[in-house]
Image (cartoon, rainbow, N blue to C red; front, side, top):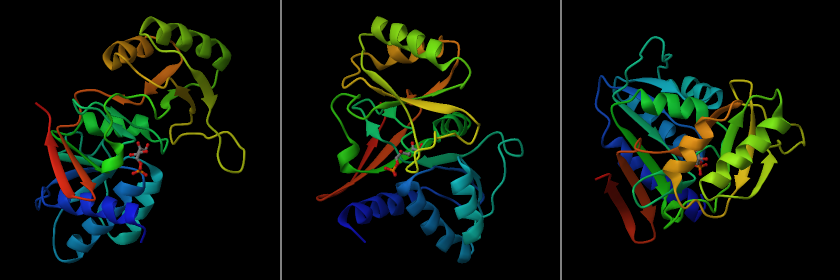
Length: 233
Ligand SMILES: O=C(CO)[C@H](O)[C@H](O)COP(=O)(O)O
């Protein structure tokens, strides 16, 4: 295991300390969340009773293959805890998410949870959001017009940068679990995440964006000097 993977696993292991038998859990998506599901599965084998609501088909398949009981949000519309990774964590625990393309389901699941714990290696902590391109999930109908509207909305929030249609490694357009496409917005800096989030949410054709504001209640960061737990004020 590389050093980075070991750090992700440390953060995931710490998050497990907040899990209790009987909990309904939102299960995140990405390489860090994958470690969490693996560790959770070990505890389930030892008798921990939980049910997981996965945020993607990939996580659903992983959880099922490891014997973690899964359910849908229709069956359990209120969750105790959601554990997920992030692409960037700002000082007020505002997040950029969606690098793995699951931002829509991730935001729905996190919003249905009483608490969201983010797990990450220390490199994800940033002074200002935006270096990681912001994923924006859009309907594929009229993408050219949606792009123009996004540019206007972003400009009004002090952001400008190239929008790139996300593709899979084989060159085909990346399609989300909900059948949409993703524009990755290279803003570099997002001076006012709340303003950008509001503006983007008003653009017809935008289904969701990767700014998670006031959703993470706790962030667990694993770095060379150990694990740090940050709580939102
Ligand atoms: O938002 C996500 C998926 O949509 C992931 O949580 C995010 O991309 C972090 O992934 P990783 O743990 O692999 O760095």
